[in-house]
Amino acid sequence: MRALILVDIQNDFLPGGSLAVAKGDEIIPLVNNIQSKFDSVVASQDWHPENHASFASNHNTKKVFDVIKLDGQDQVLWPNHCVQGTTGAAFSSDLNTDAVAAIFRKGMNKEVDSYSAFFDNNKTQHTGLEAYLKSMQVTEVYVCGLAADYCVYFTAKDAQSLGFKTYYITDATRYISEEIYNNAILDLQQHGVTILTSADI
Ligand code: VGL
Ligand code: ZN
Image (cartoon, rainbow, N blue to C red; front, side):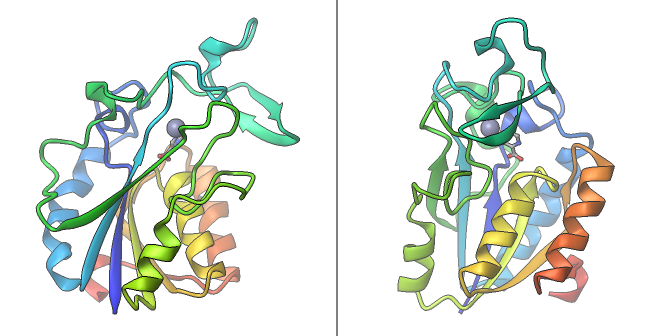
């Protein structure tokens, strides 16, 4: 069985949002189109409390995009985004979610960030996505969504390491930083993730 994971296609990551990914809206028609090619479609949703440690506003003297140490790991400080229950945290109204069978929320623990749809950045707290996919006999996972160099990257990397044959759909994602994106693609290739475009699905 093959599954499509829609990563964080939320208003705050789209033009006009607080952590807007340039041209992020361009992926939506494509993402809507390809869903019918999959046995299962699931989504992740970044879902932070207002006091989340990844928000620059929660640190004195720090600015957005500064990097700090959080629990021993490098942590980029972000603008406030995807706060639970806000419009910014909602899925884009242009995204077709009719076929989405389950939604996995992440980033609720204020002490640790959660880029991957599978678990927190310190890999202790699972979202339930791995167990869900395995219970559905999913063996192949395709990832798309926002942002290419953060949540889509870490979701693909974890999917591969959890034993799913993993595909990263480049035209169904957009990045925050081109440099980080280029490194992410190299890293995924080295870990055996297949990089493809939607035409090759
Ligand atoms: C994301 C930064 C912070 C993402 C989430 O969805 O890529 N990026 N939180
Ligand atoms: Zn976040």
